[in-house]
Image 1 (spheres, rainbow, N blue to C red):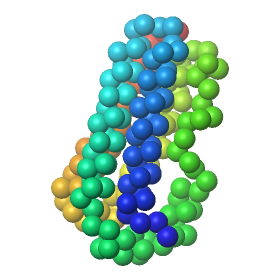
Image 2: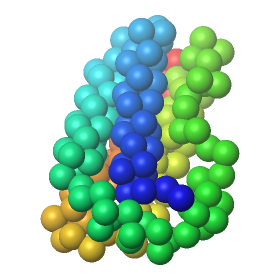
Image 3: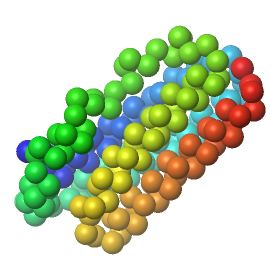
Length: 155
């Protein structure tokens, strides 16, 4: 059974993986115009991870674990499946165009949004829900930023 703290740990891992991905991409790309965009996205992912860390610190384990127990292990396991939320398989050196990098980044952002939308249904605290909604909105803005840049035809 997953506890709310374990679910928050998954969210933290997602954000830290995203931050690492964008920082590594900054080092590997040859297009200097994309570097500030990637830095902005990495910094945003770092801020999101910090928000989840604070949420984890204030989460009361006993009460919250009971709520998560209602979700059911099977439902959550089916939802995340074997997903490790790791980008270890994403070899940035094999991404030969800005478009391929952006395509991978957009998929990362979409997966993150789907996971957070699943969490929304189980959050009763309005402040927490508002914070999560803000992060979802920022993740959606990341996709817009990436797509705008991807549409420029840069390499």
